[in-house]
Picture 1 (cartoon, rainbow, N blue to C red):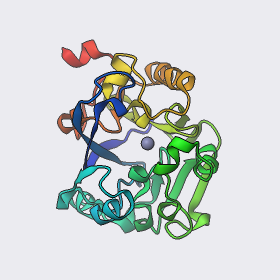
Picture 2 (picture 1 turned 90 degrees about the vertical axis):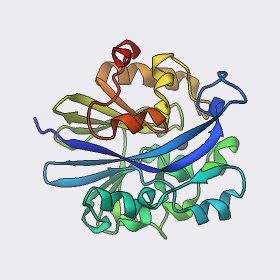
Picture 3 (picture 1 turned 90 degrees about the horizontal axis):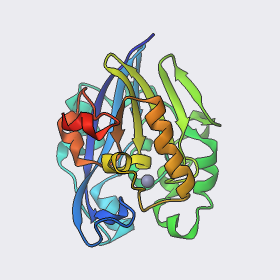
Picture 4 (picture 1 turned 60 degrees about the horizontal axis):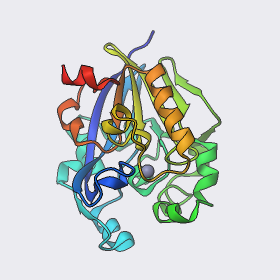
Length: 256
Ligand SMILES: [Zn+2]
């Protein structure tokens, strides 16, 4: 079976209220939450999962003072790719786990890529529930960013390449998907905001930005049964795991 090499790319850091990531836990506690994109190489392809925020200026213009956002030069998309010897033209596959602004901000840079999203997420993005309207900006993923023929709308589980699969997870948004990747160490699930922090999975605590709690808990079970390692969407723990040896699905293993 084909195996892939994974490198996580830090796309900047949001300063946020922790309980936005852990429902009912740690109200009033501020934490720094990095935004992680993931570069995957293998089977003759260069694959990127999620594309971060567009820029600090974009955040200031569209989100105002809601968040403090930090982004170093090597945390911009071009800077982060350069650090691993890639450029935007040679990325041939982009997978969006979902269409929130901090996961699609640099979609427009990948003119040669095929883009994968769940059809359900695409449709939902134009009609989100009231408290999620603030996360969707069509300009970041619509025609002005990605030409429609570049999109591959997926319904349910889908094998992109041998050993690289999309799985619907839901929870955070109705069309959120994870990416299962075969690596030499085992199967890694790139879980994005379905498991924003490892604490979500390890302590069975849902993220607070949540479309549907039932599917959120089911997604934890799906990840536990399908993967041995997880790449969470916003956990500072990933600073220690940027290349290989990703956090295991059980807390006990991570502590050992
Ligand atoms: Zn999100």
